[in-house]
Image (cartoon, rainbow, N blue to C red; front, top):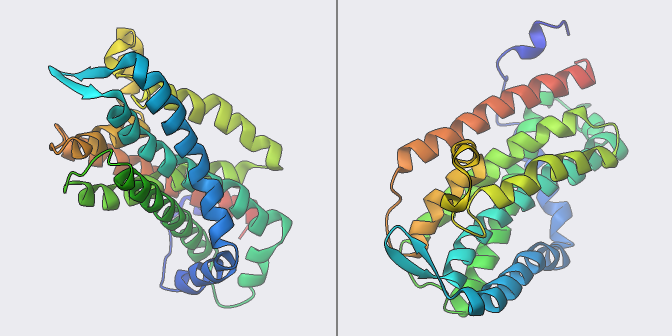
Length: 266
């Protein structure tokens, strides 16, 4: 494929579904251990910081409204969990299937195009993140952190968050030569974004320049959408937040598709 053609619009069909189903059937054998590993870390963050640090902090002000810190943290950590779960699946697991196990090569011996395989991997990563956050939301309900009926709307939003971060991660999956490459993405991109997006403390505490930059981070958009729902409120700028997330997803998926085509020289 020549240089110009790798940037052509994705050519998608319903042939992504068997690839998605294949991943589901494989994962089903290890679903419980996988779920435990995915929810353990965010729950540790929630318990350690929410109850430990929360006892010292007490409440956090959102505008003029004092919010219990455990509730503030829970609403941010569920977005962080969607990000991490989708990212991990679209990096380590997808790279294993693509590069190490050569599963993608085997799939493409059937009448399944590379574009459909990439789409299936993106949707699978988003689905796994949704499965994880559903379990976390269930634990939060058991702990009586929030009983807002608006939390039902958080579910499709978090699926969209999973799609966005899966698309971004697939860019680095296409560029990677080995697993070590992913540490740069986590260290230089995901970790700073966790601290700049209002997960652990209000973004208003940041310096003005950093605050202005953080306002356009995808995780910050997710937090701005989900946190008010935990408080039984509506997001202040939902259409702007959704538009930014959608832009990240579409642009990232297009770039990931082009780089993956280049890698396979399809």
